[in-house]
Image (cartoon, rainbow, N blue to C red; front, top):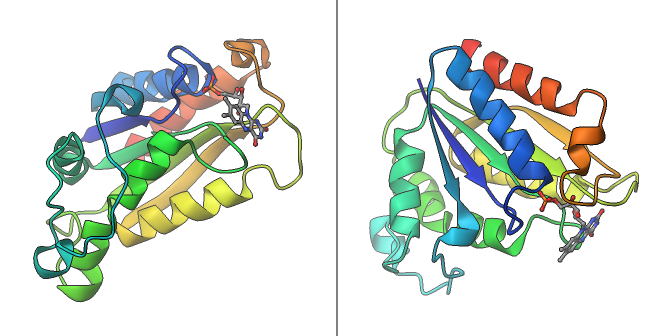
Length: 190
Ligand SMILES: Cc1cc2nc3c(=O)[nH]c(=O)nc-3n(C[C@H](O)[C@H](O)[C@H](O)COP(=O)(O)O)c2cc1C
């Protein structure tokens, strides 16, 4: 069981990083092989809608997204972590998601499995936001659910914490990190 963690925050060691690390620790405690990639350290250009992928299902832009495609294909579980930035996912996360348009082409135009095979994959979404708005996570949730649907990744749930702003504030939450550890265990057991 391979678990791919995708850290979408540009703030290293921030709240979503801490939650993601706990999810991965929980998954590893159940024997999963875990790997985390940090989007802010990668060079991933936004999709230019050049339509080159329409023929091939492959993106012609040769940057770090090529490695991310491979990691997504290898993974049995995907854990995507992004804080809320201006009501949506971070720019780093959205660039990665938009580049999955090539996988949309594979699925809907070329009628191929988007990630190369038909094994069951599951995905978890982690987010935090500084504010406490009722609809704080809705745009991000819609985006991430769309991504998982296109990639044939079953949506396995979410960890969402509003009112968490300063770096490390999540450690003051009564049980967020514990919830994350348990979610990581569940993700690889189900
Ligand atoms: C560019 C930017 C935009 C943000 N926009 C929002 C927002 O729309 N709503 C909100 O609740 N918090 C917003 N925040 C606050 C972050 O969501 C919050 O600080 C969060 O804890 C950051 O998580 P991290 O430590 O994992 O990066 C924003 C922060 C930044 C830097």
